[in-house]
Image 1 (tube, rainbow, N blue to C red):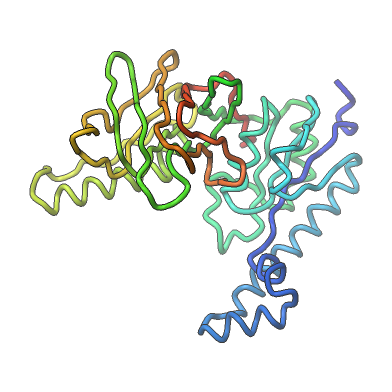
Image 2 (cartoon, rainbow, N blue to C red):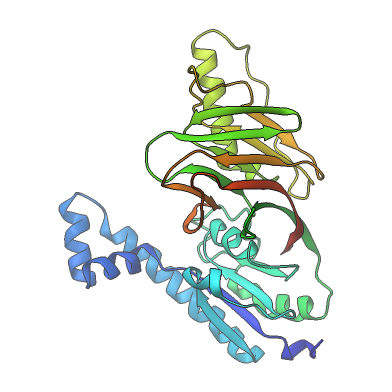
Length: 311
C-alpha cells in the first residue's frame, strides 16, 4: 500500500440543475427565459449552483494540497476503473453516494454535503471543511466506517449489476411487464408495473413508498387494520426485501408472490416474457442498465461485496 499522502483521491460530482439546463438551452440567459416563462423561480437554480460551485472549489483546493486526485462526473462511473487503494469522495446529494458506492469494492467512501440547508444529508455526514482531517485519518486507517449491504443481479450470460438502494426489474415504458418469478419453492407468472428489490439502505427509500402507498390504499377500502410503524432494515443487514408494483390478476397471471424477504443464501429468480423494452437498473440510474427481454433470466441475491461509508 502506498504512503498515506500518496493514495489517490477520486472526487465524484454531478452537474447542477442549472448546468443541465444550460446543456439543453445553450446559455444561462436562455435557460432563465425558459424557467421564468413557465412561472418558475430561476433564482433558486442560480443560488443552488453558486453554492455548489463554491464548495466544489473548496474541495478541490484541499485535494490539490493532498497530492494525487482525479475529478469525475457521475455519468462516467460505469466505465471508471478505481485503483485498489483509492479513497473516494462524493460531493452532492445523498443519491450520489449510492451512485458511487455500487461501483466500489471495499473502498472508503466519504460523503460531503455541499449545501446543508438544502439536502438532508443522511449519507452526507460531513462538509468540505472536514475533508483535510478526514483524508488523513482515512488514509492512516484511523477513521470508523459503516458497512452497507448491496444487492446483486446476475444474468445467465454473465452480466452483473449491483445496487446500494434497490434494483428495478420491469419494462422501460408505461406498459405491463410480463415475467415468471420464483422464490424458494414458490413460482408464478405475473403481469405488473415491475418489481423492486431493496437493501437495508433502500428499505427507507423507494421500497418504503411502495409499502406506504399499498397500506394507505388497503386502509381506504376497509380491508386493512391500522398500519404499524414501518420497520426499516439496518444498512448492514444481510437481507433483501422485494415487492411487486401493481400486480394484475388474470387468466394467465397470478398475484400471490408479491412481496417477501431474501436471506443471505436465498435468491429471487425472474425470467423475462417481454419481447422488447425489458430492463434491470439500480439506484434510479436507467442509463446503466441490463437488457431483460424474452428468455433472459436473472438471479437476485445479497452481494458478496459491501459498501464502506466513512462516519
